[in-house]
Image 1 (tube, rainbow, N blue to C red):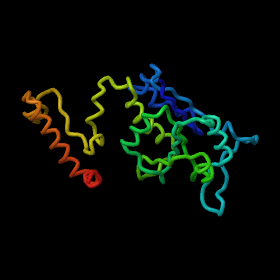
Image 2 (image 1 turned 90 degrees about the vertical axis):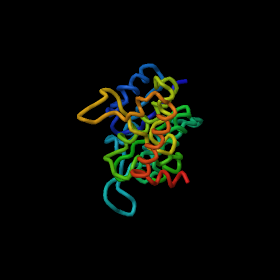
Image 3 (image 1 turned 90 degrees about the horizontal axis):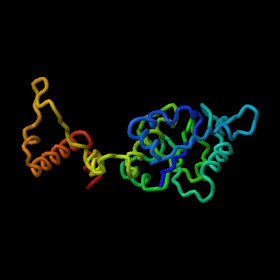
Image 4 (image 1 turned 135 degrees about the vertical axis):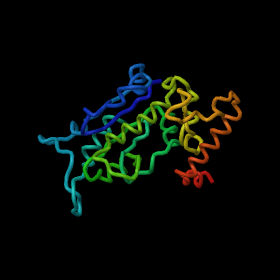
Length: 229
């Protein structure tokens, strides 16, 4: 079954962008996933195709209107559509690899790219949008964040990665950061590949990789170890 992704945006020309290349691009060509890009502005009703208005109660910036976005969502994800609906938002829950795996296991996804100061809260509640953040920083809009979410999902879809097991040993998959990697040449600028990696002893190599992953995680992301209990 093809994984169906729908993206709602004011800048449809930004897609597929990077998703049209490399692993994701090849998967798109093979129909491992499909992409529908919806222009939110098409669902405005006035001659100026207005999608935003001033915030109620005052304040800086503009807010994306509930009625316009609601119509766009009803078009892209009508009643009965069971795909998760995500709103890219800096106030959302941080995206995790576990959540990515859950999203990849669904039939597809609906991604709303926020703009301006935000989205009218009523459409968030009325259309059951899950607010998701890719980090503690602010972007100009949700398009880049939506691409990040999709990229993380697509690589986990069946038939996308050549080596299915390759995704099982990466950072965050087992609660640790990934161990260091090496390849030829054996020496580079006076630095050698650790001897254990060329020893041919798979058990010792696995033990070394685990120890390296644990050490890196303790130094760089101790929160991952704390979260793991």
